Length: 246
Ligand code: BTN
Image 1 (cartoon, rainbow, N blue to C red):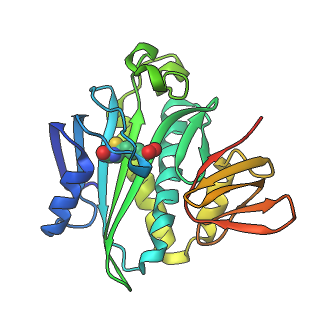
Image 2: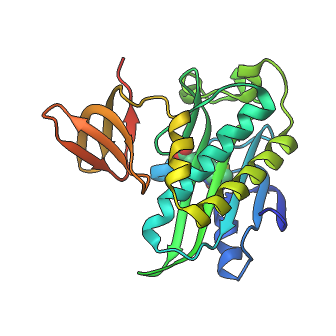
């Protein structure tokens, strides 16, 4: 992973470049990194603020021999790799908010966007987009995200090396990817849960079909979120925005 690196000073989105080179046959583990993005993409078609050199904006191409329904697990694997890297490089102990946000003190440090290109029965390639706020100061964030976003520098009180962070993320991603292909998701689920903030707490999940509230129970071996609603029914959540009401 990360043996082939494509670096760009400024691009619209590393996701777009990664899709293009993957379609042209880029090999597994190819990494696309940009100094800044002019049109960074977030989950659910939201924009991702990345028009500065202070964060890590990168997309990783992987080609696992798996059916497409396994793709969401890669988001969780990437989240664990990022959380572990943040821990080792900065000493901070971040939380993962299902499926893929990495938070510290309730503020977002990292977002992950996994996009799938595949057929009915197999993944062709996955593009795992990782955005990490590294050396931004509070005033670097646009007004509407100031209260919900933070950076490694703000939280740790000192500048953080982007190169060190990238090296650690790739190292752990590779390690967990190998573990996953050998042993399946079960050992990773345990790791993921060790970072998950909200298990056992009240939770609200907003999905495209509506809102489900209840208690967060955990994730399944497939990486699906489980919520027990107020009637005691267990609901399986495949895709949603979640909130922990206080
Ligand atoms: C989210 O939390 O909504 C996901 C954000 C993902 C952002 C990264 S930055 C690198 C890659 N390129 C993009 O345009 N998006 C992802």
